[in-house]
Length: 510
Image (tube, rainbow, N blue to C red; front, top):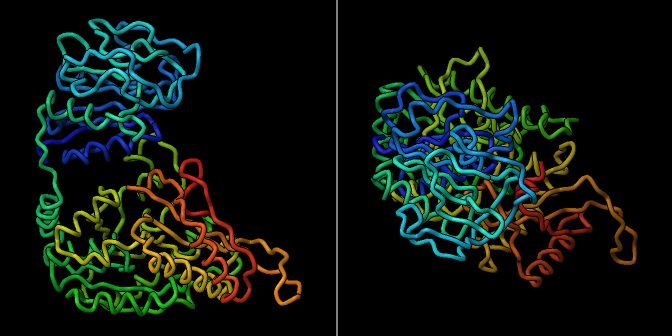
């Protein structure tokens, strides 16, 4: 990569969105923790400082060494990053008289500046800070203001150093993408050459060099991520790739059989392994969400270890891990961002397993994975599939897992998903599924009192899974789906619809 952007993570919940917005401009970006700067900065053409939950006025404030960056290469500070550039370089940051969160509009814009070209007075921006820059750093020139924030944007004279107190990476900042383009393309001079085709070409060559003639085992799930990972590896190593599709007993209705048929004509070497009894037996009595994830992950690895012994000289285990999986599990590049949950694809292998890990998609967001798949000519039926969690229905059954509960949820899920397809709603939804709640409620069927399960339906729209909004499905569809579920699925007498967004909720309930 010869046109890299380095993003220093100070722990902001939006750090990963910065990376995604940069990539939307076809420019490659990497996130590194603020306290682990790369020793060789020559491969980077620009640096962005993220926001942070910390205050620059705190004694424990994140404090990187920017001596090799500031004034020597294009530098953009966002929120905390801007306040950092001010506070430690001759300016003054103080508590804001009012906490500045949410939408604001630019009341002053110095739009003759290249940095703000295309942004006009009144342009909407998104604020999220409780400190504010009272005095600009040495050489600072004010470029933009809002009604409440005088120094909303600034530059440092004689440098390609800029600071903004709002977040251009969130969709609420109307011209945020344009501002990033101004900085990266017009000011830093980066080429917009990081495309799906370029990714495929580079990744295939890297996989050939890394793997050579070794054999690789890949766990297929039928989803977008593992399918695209399989095709990349197939392009690189051909028949040395051995794909295994494991039935963990927590798949959707008939999914094990359907997925095996799906891959039949893709040229992949696929073996189906029914380990459902093994998974369900290991999960017996476990109700803690993290406990369930860890059990599913452990048994998944054990099954693969068994299969690995059947493939002579297998050296690698391939996984379809993508960037959001890694971000939520181990934080951005091991940095200070908050950990939300563990992920089944992320973590070390046990000592007894001798396979090395290869993750061709580990730095891609979900929409990027789909674009890469399309560039390889993969079918829309695969690329258009909704994301489905690796632990499957195991984290959509709240509480302990039994075969009876799995059977109930499989039927509910099938009615919901097939209904979305019949009503022409499936492709308008990013992810959908049903949750079996640990709640029994009173109902009436045929003049008889029932005391049965409640299920929650969930449908969200998103682009990368980092944020998501609930989908306003038609009442008529919800009514029909609810009636079908209650009438056709024994054991369920109540259906509810989840209207929570992420954040504050997550897409899955566990």
